[in-house]
Amino acid sequence: MARSQHLSRGVELPKKLRNRYFALRHGESKANVAGVILSNPKDGVVSFGLSRRGKKQVRDSVSQNDVLDSNVVIYSSDFLRARETAEIAKNLLDARKVNLHKNLRERYFGGFDETDLKNLKVVWRNDKINADNKHNGVESPNEVLRRTIRLINGLEKKHKNKTILLVSHGDVLQILQTGLRRKSASEHGKIPYPKLAEIRELKLGPRRRRNLKGGSTMFDPKESRTVGYHLFFLPEGELFDGLQSTINALADKYGGAKFEPHLTLLARIPKADEAELIAKAQQLATTMSPFEVKPKEVRAEDAYFRALYCEAEPNPTMEEYHQKALEAFGVQDVNVYMPRLSLYYGNVPQSTKDEMIASLQLPASMKFLVDKVYLYRTEGEAQDWVRVGEYPLGK
Image 1 (cartoon, rainbow, N blue to C red):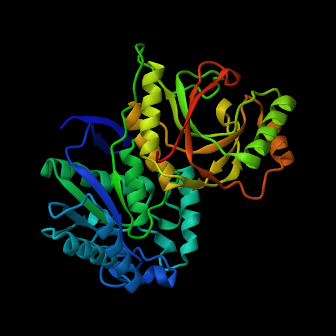
Image 2 (image 1 turned 30 degrees about the vertical axis):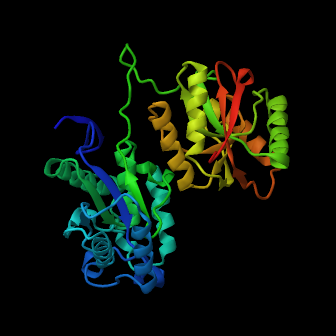
Image 3 (image 1 turned 180 degrees about the vertical axis):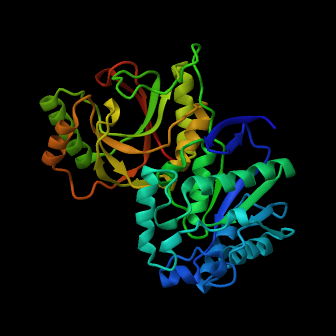
């Protein structure tokens, strides 16, 4: 089977998947109820199964899913909470059996095992810095990625044209999904964390494209010009006006570009017949429903279009719609999708950004309803961008 690039030491992905994969996180367990981390197999395999509520969560989730059926092939972690989840799914779907696999076991949290769940935040903070994070004896993101990708490769050899359900744990499924998208395991926190009993499809990300000289087509982070078209979500009313005033004031004071406040759904759509792009945007809008988004933490990066922004809370709906947009427009995106509401575009020192942040006066809540998608022609500098049209969601 042909292989693509390494994601981490000893991990390779197939160029394409022969099977369709879905992830199911276990329902609420007795460890969740107790508020403790339980990752040691000597305990997890034999105890701390699902709570009554957890069993109902699984029944509801599987019953509401309209893709999985009796032909599904189920593989599960051998931890009791996962096994019980898998058995409920098997019975509801009338599937053949549950196949247990140790590669789907809970991530081992070392010295944090049997401690308060809040310590997961310490682990995740270290993960962001290093994909080989083993602080306090935890299993590193790369180790989790390697064992789960080995499982995928084995299933690809064993099965063909099957729908496969992987029943596992939050960190394990989040890291696997990150790896399948060809991202570093250290970036797993950028993908919304799987909810208890949540079912989500796992898809293989596009391979990194190369230009004719063999270089990557990754966008230069210091570049102030962009190309093609973009799809945006815009706030409305007082929030739009307030953010526009903030953007204009920062641009005037620090010499940046002026632009309308927005969250990007899809970037750098290649130039094509504009009527065709409008039709695709209209069709895409009909497949989406209105939802709320909440920009929160202010961040700064050493990049022109990410100089200063409010990062949006992880939102599974936006992630789903981003994937739909990628497919609708045939765009290959090698970046992790990170929705954000930009406040300043420009190449300025960190000290200047710190000054901006200190002077910001933003609303206490910037949550807003998204009920339209906007198509922009984004050739050149931000001030040259042109709104092509707006399309109501679900219509």
